[in-house]
Structures are given as C-alpha cells and as structure tokens.
Image 1 (cartoon, rainbow, N blue to C red):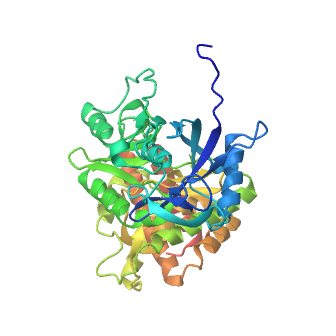
Image 2: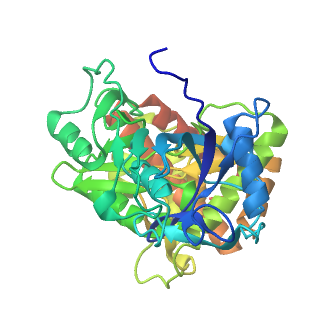
Image 3: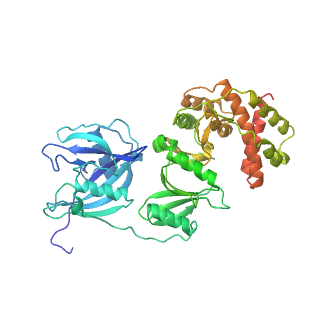
Length: 463
C-alpha cells in the first residue's frame, strides 16, 4: 500500500436504455429533482449497488424497475464501458455503464420526489444541462471506447461544460493483431469508419472468395464488412439499408458506412445464430416460424404498397436458365416448368411492396436467450409481390403443416388464391435459376434445393 489509506470507492450502475429510430439511436434520460445531487440536470437511470449480495446486473435491473417502471431480462444486459469519476467535491467512484435494447413496459417517472421528467434523446444531441459524469459515459459509448477517466477539479460545475471537459479515454490493450483480413483498401475504409480493428474473421457463406468479414474492434465493438459481387447488389443493399430496413428497428443491422468504389459496406452486428441447419424443439420451431411470419409482415408493411407498373415475374431469363440447368433436371421437369410459367400471363396483377429477396433460413438469426429474430443480407432486395419472400422458405416447412400455420398466423393473414398461384410460378423460376447458378459456381446445395422444390411442386400442382 503506497498511500495513507486504501480507496473505498462506491460502484454505481448506469442504464443505457437504447432504441433505434429512422434518424438514429436514442437513449432514455431522466431529470433529477428535489433535494438531490445535480437537481435539475439530465442523467441516465442509475444507482448504487446495494451491498455485497448484489451484482452490477442485478442492481441495474432493480434501478430500472424502481425509477422507470420497466422490466429487463438479465440476458438483455450488455456491458458497454466503465468510467472512473471524481466529482468537483473530491469524492471518486467507479461507474459501470450497461446497455439494454429490449425490455418490457413503457418507461415513466416512478420516483417523482427525485425525478420530474423522463424522455428519449438522440445520442448525438443530448439535452442541457446534463451531468458531466453522465455525458462522459455517453461520449465514451458513442466513440466505441470501453474505459475512461473523468476526474473533475474543485470548482468545476456539476453540469457538462465543453470548456471543462475532463473525459480522458484509456485505449484498450492492443493484443495480437490478426494477419488475416480483406485487402488493405477495405481495412483502411473500415478503420476510418469505426476505429482500429483488432481481428478479422472470414464469415463468408462460401470460402472460395471471401465476401463477408467480421471485424472485432480494438475498443470492443463488432461490425460486419461486406464486399458485393457487383454494382447492382451493392446498390440494392444500400437502398434497402438506407430505406425500409431502418424501419425494422433492432430486428436488422444498421448501416455504418459505404464505399461505392470498393462495393463495400460496414454494418452493425445483430445477435443470434443462423437458422440454417439448426435444430430446435418442436414448440420452439413453431415460435420461430411465427416470428418469421411477423417479420415478413413488417418488411412488407415498411413502405406503402404500390400498383405494379410492369412485369413482376422474371420470365425473361427462363430459357437461358433452362439451357444451363437442362442436364441436371429430372425427366419431365422442363415441360412442367414451361407449363407453370406459361400461366403467368393470365395471373391478376399484384401490388408491389419491399421484399427481402433472399428470405431463407440462412439469412435469419435466432437469439434463444431473448427469443428474438433478426434478418441480414439485403443485396437481392427489391419491390415485388410480398409472396416472393416465401418461395425459399417453403423447403423449411415442407411436411410440417404446423410450421406453415405458425408462419401464416404471424403474418397476420392467409395467402390469397392469386398469391398462391404467383408462388407456384416464382418457385419454378427460382428453382431453375438456382440449379443453373449452382452448376456454374459448383454449389451442390443450390442444385439440390432447386431439384427438391421442383419435385415437391410436381407432386402437388397440376401443370
């Protein structure tokens, strides 16, 4: 011990209750009132740990219930950062800032004697006056850093004042740098957007040419960097991320940065594991498919439906795809495909809505802890009939009417007869194009999926 006394600093917890809006992230703040420290100033919902029986997470959940009347599942609490703070009066403390983006209840003032207002504020436009300690924590959070010192001097105001900003971020340990990663231009673009990257992990669906990387930041953040195959996919994903995807809230990633020359985007991470190949108990499967239907409904309602102004079925490429797929088709497949596709001219027009375009299990992430579903990969997004998004899912519910019923219940309505006919045509077109693409790119999974879909359809549909 080098000093006359040991530090016995209290530990407090701060709730970064976050919601994502069309204009950016917002955080919940409360205004202190009455005979308390920093009365009249905005602050995060916060409080002290009660004693050795209570950990940080438990304390945060208790304070959220007491101050704002909301219930938080422990699995939803995530560590954000720590601030070592000293007040103008000379007392110091350790503050743990914890992030929560899913909860139950509507935040409201529950302790009017010490709080007279509560509201949501943009993370980059915080209200005044705000407690300097709180502002230091939120500035550290917004910068993607994980540790800061905030030692105020005697005479400093309690409220944040730009001229007396005492926040000092501590850089994290460098750790071993990963030698693996995308080309240097992509690495440089990413680090300009989010800061230094400690490790790169190739998470591409196919490994022959990496197109998707997980980037783990030196400050603890996680992002994904995607390099599109062509300009068309790049623009489609950008249009979706800048448009209707933002209306899905936390169910989808957010765009951080884009670079058209590299055809690269940086997006935030969303929790969960791909449903592709995953095994769940039957009851959980039904819940998952109910969530899938609900998510599909949210996608299709993310912009007003519009009358179709031209062809909505990709018939123009059918002959070319048949030429490429012919050697892999079963006897009678080609005639069946042409017969079903020939119905397209007689189908009634359907309104167009935003569609994901590749709505299948591998692009859907399930978080079992929070029972939430997330969707990724929007490079095939475009306007079209909403039923387009069910074509690649049909393989997953085949033989399981309970899953289809759960999906339709989540979607909020049954498919119309016209939508069912569109789905048949779209299925044969998608099957043939998938077989053709799989043959050209040595992807046996795509080939088998297309052949299964044709066999399934031929067993149930009269040409």
